[in-house]
Length: 188
Figure 1 (tube, rainbow, N blue to C red):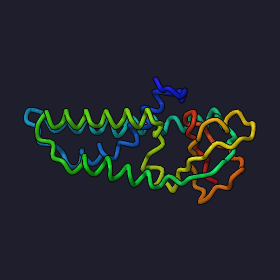
Figure 2: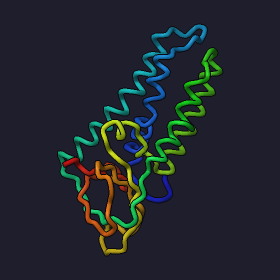
Figure 3: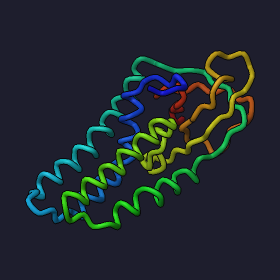
């Protein structure tokens, strides 16, 4: 599926969907007036897309901790990705929330657009974009490859989710593997 060997396709897909759960949460609050569709069905749809992906993410974190699926990565240049969170919020959440859904066609077009966004986030390996990391005080860094002979660093950029405020080039960090390129450092 992915050309760059990321692996863990289902995990990445569910992590992308968990990053979109604020949209479904807002939709559930806003509600819809689609003729012939009971509100309870729409609320169930929204609840499903809030709970299932986030429960999976919670399960994935617990699983990698239980299995001690840690890797040591060496930080190359570190880039803080907080600006990506702003792009995510303004480019995705606000436009979808601000438009009224009044017909099945409106709803279908929204779902098609969301499917397109999910595919792009999944294909571009942006499955780490999740507002809940920020709520819990985590920062997201992209670590450029560092040529140190380590088989887990030096090939692809990696994403580190951590509570650190800065990362020093060359620093070795032990973190849990959420996907092939996304790592979660346990807070100390």
